[in-house]
Length: 211
Image 1 (spheres, rainbow, N blue to C red):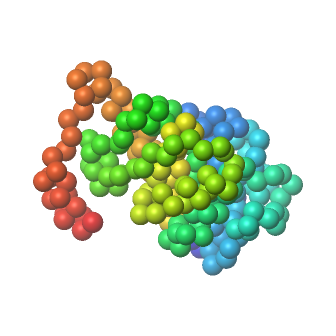
Image 2: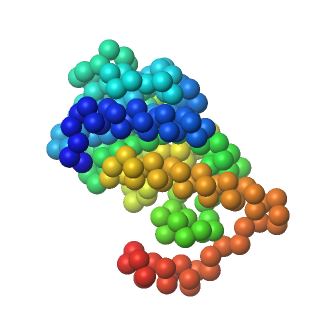
């Protein structure tokens, strides 16, 4: 994370446009943030602006208490869980929240991610599904932060996906892989269900990749 602030703003804008273009967020839904290296300052997407047309100057800088340090717009109302995650996970420098339709749809039906691909077996072996809590609250922030410990992502059952990473690319990759797996699961469910990778093969894969 050796980017300067202008580069980080560009990254966040590009990320949101990518998510919007892929149908993983709606125009005013979803949010993303990056922690500034070596600081308690966070660059986060603004609230209520159309995400497909964000500009670098629209990005808001806050501290981990939610105080606005720079920016003319309000930060995302979900800044609570961004800050709570950064407070607990020193290994995390990026957080993304999407409304991924396939992944959220499966969670609404109580369907957990299963080891149907190499990525799901290794990267996403256990993705918690959280019951609904009112958006934009400190309570939701604490629940998300507590449950994402040791995980790359959590799914809020009626609200969408939250993924974390060392950088924005890692978090974005998790979002994309989750939706890919969810789409495969949905398709397979119409033809008798997905075949899982056997447990002994998963252990061999983990040994091969030293996981």
